[in-house]
Image 1 (cartoon, rainbow, N blue to C red):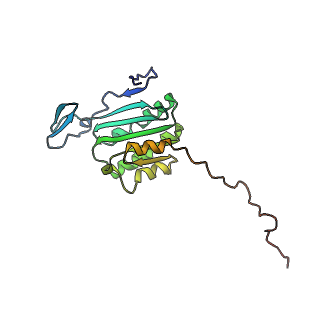
Image 2: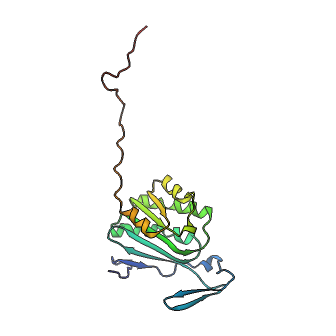
Image 3: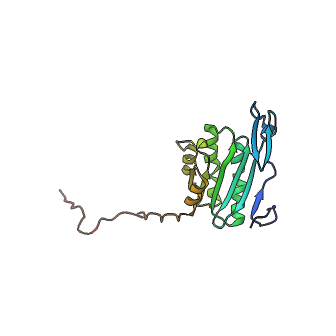
Length: 197
């Protein structure tokens, strides 16, 4: 069941009005024409055409899915993390799928750092898993953004398919390993023999 979400409702789907456009930040579509098929309609993109990143949030049975589409700066994505975390809280979901497979634009080293750094907000909202789905060419093979997020205690993984991300989200978390608490006492019979001189 899909329906629109407003700030006051608790339905299943949220589509943002256009986020601030890339043009507002001085970005212009590349100096070329590009034709994309969209539902049987030919869309022509020219230099100077306003492009923006859009966010659609859908409540799934076991997680919240946040899908970004469009062309623009990577900042347009991570600036929405708190809004997404709030929606997880409202929907009572502790797992999140971030789908950026349909976004286009340059992702710099600094952007990858900011993705991981800002993802720390998900820890404060008690999310136990955050899966990111991207296209293979978007993936940093050193997984720098993932490492930054994990260093901030975010249980995050990056995948090159939505299916792989969903599969990981559905896995039950492994039971935490028991750690010794307090002082370790050797077992009887294995005590060191102390001699006094």
